[in-house]
Image (cartoon, rainbow, N blue to C red; front, side, top):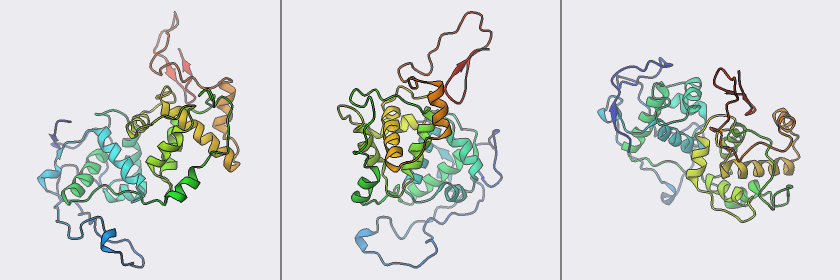
Length: 293
């Protein structure tokens, strides 16, 4: 369990004047305020969240002790947005921050990466307040028939599928982008997505949510290239593209030209050989190619 610490000073990294991470007086977030629109009566059995929520002041000392590391907060953000409760812009506004701060924090990877970002503290306070009010993480309500139809690629076959060796022409970052976009679809759940991509292997595997979160938490064109999630997701999205009759992207065409036999998914992304005479550390371009100066 991460060690708690007190937010004792303003972070030195990118700041957002709309966020007060020290627990001083801030605008109170009313989590129970209904969205505009025609009200509809629900059955008592359908109401999952308590209706008489305790008020939690913005200067409540319990909001000042951060007990989640950066990766844990990022996982909560992904789960919350994946439920369809809010989109990125709405969530950034709800925590009192901006889309720019959201992107700065969410594109980092590591328990302490992003600890200097305002968004880290703002998001932690948001979820801690919900926890203190007894609010559970919302779950996306999806009809199984709709999800099955959305994910059905059973009529598409790819070369190399029987051997589990379909050549890949996307980077890990591109596949991550597609996964996150797909999971934001109102008719898709994380569990349903994992069940579907598991079918891409010759012998169907069980792919767990933790494996997905580990892959999504990485950053870099080849970061996560040996992951089963990377391979299975690529195969699924390629089948989805063919099923829907969509053309190849410019990125995809570039990857085919650079990697005629497919992107490397055997060599770990943090292992490379330094050629004799190389004076500086290698760098990786957006296509996952390693260059030496």
